[in-house]
Figure 1 (cartoon, rainbow, N blue to C red):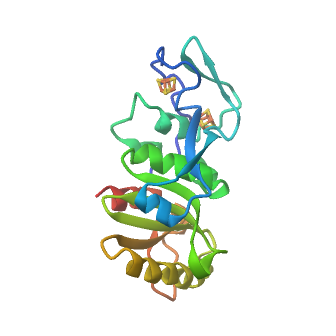
Figure 2 (tube, protein in one colour):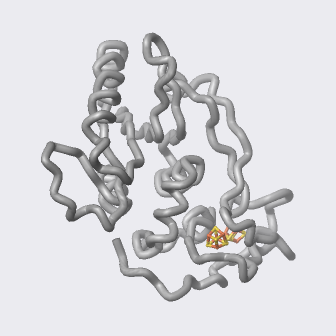
Figure 3 (cartoon, rainbow, N blue to C red):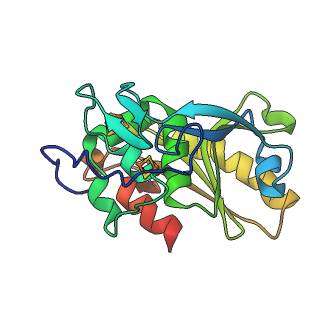
Length: 214
Ligand code: SF4
Ligand code: SF4
């Protein structure tokens, strides 16, 4: 992940005169209470409106995004902007963005939906059958591959979630033999060098972006 920036450029907005209500940098619709089946079959997904900014530091005046001093430079709104996707988008990945994602899975859903517009992305995804109490932190469905992602800071718990997500994948592999189900752990960049006494598919934000995108 890139080094922490002093502050982001808050004047990136080029304006959305065609938007009547709120632009994508302020509010987005994200799937809620979804099941894995709904995502794979792209059916019956229910959407809820969701604020992008965790600091409520945004306004929309004269068709442009206005950012107030409450902003902490997490950069999520810049990534979510529908008009200006930076060429080097990973330069916007920083520790503040990371901490927003780990606190709020809805924001993680918005981030990956913005990074992969042709994917279906949902957070806290439900699992049918004997797994009714399970929730998958994040599902990214793209090109017939369903990435089941656990956001995890306590790396010691990875074996538990690996077994749990693995059981879900075993079941869905039988139900959807044409879909590739993949499990991974999104971890903080600061923990990438931690030596683990077990095998684990761990990625920081930039690595996961590359894995899903390629
Ligand atoms: S989506 Fe982009 S261009 Fe539109 S108002 Fe937001 S920041 Fe500005
Ligand atoms: S950079 Fe983050 S904190 Fe600042 S306005 Fe955008 S979403 Fe809010």
